[in-house]
Each structure stands twice: as structure tokens, then as C-alpha cells.
Image 1 (cartoon, rainbow, N blue to C red):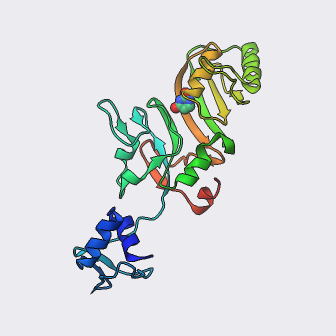
Image 2: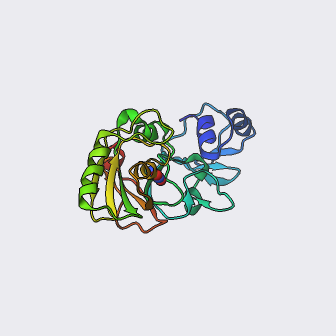
Image 3: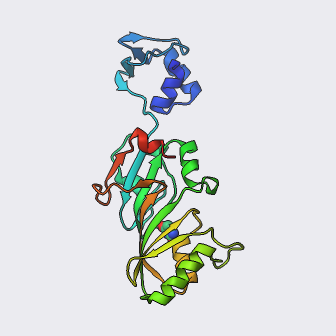
Length: 234
Ligand code: URA
């Protein structure tokens, strides 16, 4: 990679700031001052800017167990912290969340700085399924469960929407707990689907995105990098 591009990516300089800094002799590569912006930085080179080591931050793919009362946004509010503030990580401002959860939803979120990858996770065109575990306010007797399963599978017209939801798979684990698999990401979709079915979601947890399940070893707030095989699922 050219030194000016490297400088932009490693320390967030604009291209013209990088060029000026290089000309001033602010960069050394393997101990040697380099004033040529087009200089090709070797793979394992030791690069310093103003006598401080700098490194490229590569593209990152992360799963986090989102805790309650946090925001899937890039900044905090008075009420809640952003999930990105919980991370001790370089350049958090470059990251974004691929598919947001509500403040009161817990579970699997994917965080990356790769826009194309997150598009594949979130765009309805890719029909990437999301699996939610739901606790309901009102117990649902068996006969009503069967009706709700049919309604979810046929598609439900949500309040203020003009077309029904795509077919969703609903499974009851008890009268008050269920798993719902959807392939869209409409605003408050799961809560609105259960509201349309005459119930209320009292707790919501995302267990899976596509074929990727939340790592059971991750406690709320904890995160880890995805493996290459996990990245390749999308
Ligand atoms: N559906 C909701 O209602 N909330 C979420 O956080 C995710 C899906």
C-alpha cells in the first residue's frame, strides 16, 4: 500500500494532510524517514508517525452479546450507552452495527467496518433469517398457538404498514415463551407482530443471525472476533 493511503487508514488523516505530513518527514519506515507519498509500505514494516508506532486496523467482524438497556447506535444518549462504548477497541468510530436491536432487546449483534458485508446481513434481498426468543405477557393456550403459527407463516399486516410480513416461523416452547424466525428487519418487527396477534412481548433476545448463533460463552457485554468461517457465512 502507498504510504499516503497507509497514513490515511492508520491515523485518519485526509489524503492532503497525509501528503503534507509525509513531505515534512513525519513518517519513518523501518527507521528511515520517507518523504515520498507513493512509497510502497512493505507488509511487515515498522511504521512510525511523529516517533509513535502506527499500525493499520484491518477490517473487523465482531459478535457481541448485547446487554439490556444499551443502544445499537454510534453514540450514547443521556439514558443509554451505545454498545460501541462498551468495547475497548481501536477506532470504534469506524464500526457500525449490522442490524440493530432495541434498547430493551438482548442477544446477538454483529459489528463491522465492512459495509458490503453488513449489507448482506441486513438487506431483505439476501433473506438472512433472524431467530428471536420471546417471552409473552399473556399465556397462549394450545389452540390459539396453532392459529398464531398459521398467521405468522401466512404473513401479518402490521399497523401502519401496507404489506404483510414475509412468512415467519413461530414455535412455542410454553404458553408464554416462543421462538420466532423472520427474514426482514422492519421497525420493532417482532413486538409489532405479537401486538398484531393480540399479545405483548415482555422480553426479547436474538439468538441467531442467518446460520450464526450467539456464542454461549459470551456473557452480556462480552464480544469476540468472528472466525473466517463465520465471516464467510454471509
Ligand atoms: N424486533 C423488535 O421488535 N425489536 C428488536 O429489537 C428486534 C426485532
